[in-house]
Length: 177
Image (cartoon, rainbow, N blue to C red; front, top):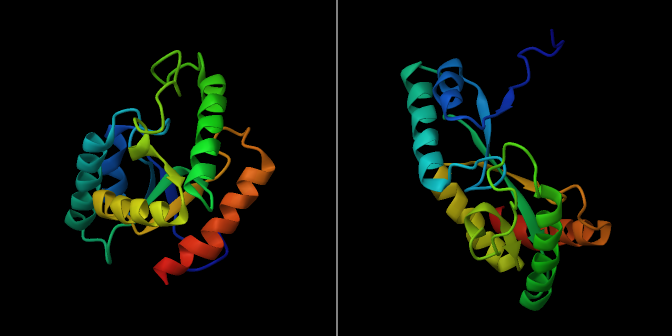
C-alpha cells in the first residue's frame, strides 16, 4: 500500500473500447492515445465517444470533481515551419521502419501515412501550430492534461528530443499559464 494518504491518484492507460466505462465507474484518471496513433487504432470519432462514455460513467457513479483525461501524443516541435517539416519527414521514415511488421497495430507498413494523414494523431510543427493543436485536443477529448511523447519510436535523435523539449518549455507551455 502507498504510505501517502490520501493515496496518489492512479493514471491508467486505456486502449480498448471495453475499458472506458469501467475506469469511469471506478473513478480512475485515464490516459488515451490521440487520434489514430499506435495507442488508438480506432480513430478520433470512436475515441471521442469512448471519452464521453467514460465521463458519463464517472458522473453516474457519483465521483467528486471532473473526470481526468490525459492525451498522450507523439510530439515534435521546431522553431520554423521548414525545420519542423524536414524533421517530420525524417521521423515518419523512422516510424515506417520502427512499426513495419509489428504485430497488432493494423498494417504491416504502419507509419506509411504522411504527416497530413496523421495530423489528428500528433503534435508536429512550430510552437504556434502545436498550441493550436493542443486546444483542439482539449476540446475534442475534454482533456486537461497532455503527455508529450518526444521519443515516440525510441529512435528519435537526442538533439531532436532536446530541441522539442526546449520549444515546449520556452514557447508552448507559457501559452497555457
